[in-house]
Length: 112
Image (cartoon, rainbow, N blue to C red):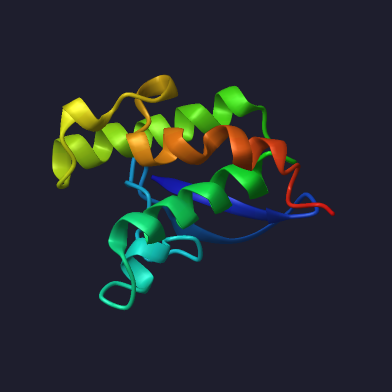
C-alpha cells in the first residue's frame, strides 16, 4: 500500500507501509528481549508491561491500552510462544500484563 507522508498538510515523499504488520519486538519497552539473559525473564516482562500501561495511561483510555495488550497477547499465542491459557487479563492480555495493569494505570504517567 502506498501512503503519502504529510508534514503540516504538505505532501512529502511517498513511502511504502505494510498494513497489518505485527508489533515490532525489541522496541524501547521490550525489556524481556532487550535484556534477555541478564535478568529474570518474567520480571523483565512485567517491567515492560508496567511501562506500557504507565506511559500510555496519560495518553489513551485504559480500554485502548487493554486492547493493545490483548492483541499482542493473541498474536503471541498464535504466532509466538504464548499459550492461549495464559490470556486471562482484560481483552485477552496475558497474566503478566494483568498483574501490573492496575498499579501502572494508577501511576498517572509516573508523575510525582
